[in-house]
Length: 604
Image 1 (cartoon, rainbow, N blue to C red):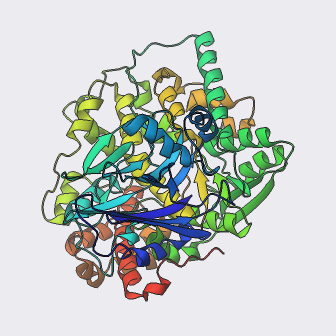
Image 2 (cartoon, rainbow, N blue to C red; image 1 turned 90 degrees about the vertical axis):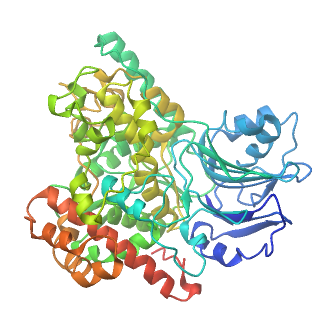
Image 3 (tube, helix red, strand yellow; image 1 turned 90 degrees about the horizontal axis):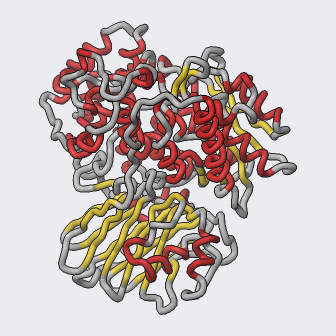
């Protein structure tokens, strides 16, 4: 797990190839153990290392035999042993590091180098002989990668701070529209003009004489569903195979040469990953980390404690108080993009606890809700037959129907009033066309996995774990498990006996206690009132701050603040505006600081 950045121009020599050295220093939190460089006349590849596999000999960049192919990678190829075995007869390996298999896979298979790889990655591959540069992001979008192309030079970085130089570019108003519509900024946009985010499952290819070209090599897509109701025997077969596939996904992610732990809530997803991992690692004691709250209606620690005790785990409980809400700006400085979720603060605090215990790698439960329809917004769709909709939704597009049930987002009319115009460019029309042949629930799952999972869930998980120099692994985002989940009959995702995520509850019923199996879905979040009302909103959403930022109309914000603070929907939208302005103030302050302090990490 690392940070990568660099610059390349296949058509001409770089004028100052080491101009990226200062930017690499800003990524030190992603790789505090060492750094490495490749420099030639056309390309410079920089690397910061967090040592997980082959601690002694796993430095980067990685080279093929004649050093004409150079690779830097952030992430893990979890099936590297299997790939190494298949490649070893024709290729010579220099290290035990997992990413080296991609060097030789490219030698053998070219642009199909990822066809057999399982894992999470953002990588750069420079083919000196053919003057070809390839950037790649993993299928589920676990690892981010940003890029910009100007005057024939492509620059890239694991984080935005590696591309911003000494000042901030103009804010992209279309990205602000996207944020208000989705609660995050879907790829390929970022908050800044002319800086792009590589979409999940894509390669970016730069060759001599041509501008960069995007190539999609994989995309999440639930299969068509015929609406049939499986009998008991078929249901049992689906549950058994799901358990086997999840067990495989967890098992392949347990390899590590550094201490490993588990994130554990009372939720089904994290408890499933924890229980499978603890069983596989038995009789070794495992360590689990839980966030708790004083508010009993959202505090999950009692059930998490029961699950941890069942496996005799060392259980670290960290309680979050309302006073800590004041640190939201600091958290958003690490995230670098506005993401409207009140899971930001709890996520940051649990990773602080993990690092304080000396743990370097953790397994998390993210992704289960997006695969198995775990959110309350899916409940009604789970009961519809393919092709059925409510009368008042017939005229709406699939994406519009999906967003009507999304949290933290504004209506089209509210967005027009906040921005003073309509900036909807219909850029998701192709995705909607793909969704058109699916049932209503299938459409919702497609949007969850294509949009929300990579650019909201995974961005939060990556940025806040790497801020503490941690690697977070999410077994539910194994692409083989995602493909399998897309084949499960929709009728098995929700039933009268188990409720939401019924098939996953059945699959885990022999390994988890009834307190988890029968527990209804509860989101991992801090109370929204901490941020949407009181001091945070007063300081960030006053007329002066909104005018200075220039992102939204202050009169419209004032009207929204006048609405009842007791209404959850109003609080969620106010929180979205708090996040937006807290993010903007955070990045402005970051560039007001001395550059030596930018990127410093506190691993308390």
